[in-house]
Image (cartoon, rainbow, N blue to C red; front, top):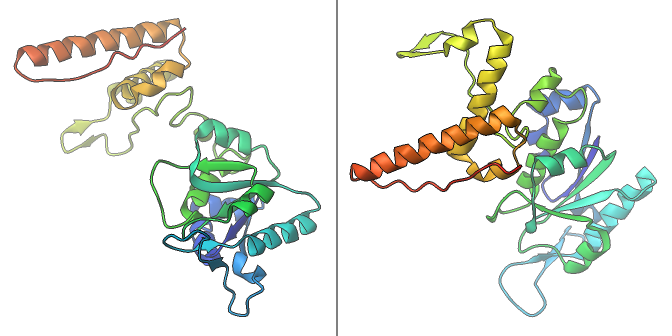
Length: 267
């Protein structure tokens, strides 16, 4: 996997991605990351890449020429026109399924906007995907690009030392990850669940799966509609929902108020 990041702040991007798992993957040649400074493609002697918006308004807009020149130069080097992701809050919200699909690409280009955004003509000419990491506004597209690259890279074969780690974490089968524990066995009166010390691998797998279901119901019940559960797991989820309703009714009878929507797994 080769990442090409069109940005006004190449050092910010490279400093952030050359550490930890992603940095080691880059050193091993499993992925490659280059930050392309859009300012290098400015025709202005002061390397300006922005100007006032037509029609008025606050802020500045990134000009189309430096962006397109940077991309066309990259295409000439690669001998092909790779997919271009524009990071914007107007895009589709990035998720694990999108990451999995993008991990199959040989090259990915990330266009990082700044100021009040990018001239629409540049986007019409080169952008193929519009992706967001959430409904909020940041000062630039560099952080979203780094988030996506981190997520995608974890799905590239060999990046994780234990491939199982990439498959059995949050959002696997549309469920959140189960609780994790390490030494000591007891900390401030809280003990590691006995099943994890039992050495019984089948029971441990069952416990982890049930805890994933329980945690998803408590924290992200919206995910359960598309969760991949077998018959016994659906029965376990129904049991949890009944217990949740009973607890809610009990709290209401005692003078409290708890609002819990009943999310049932379909299928």
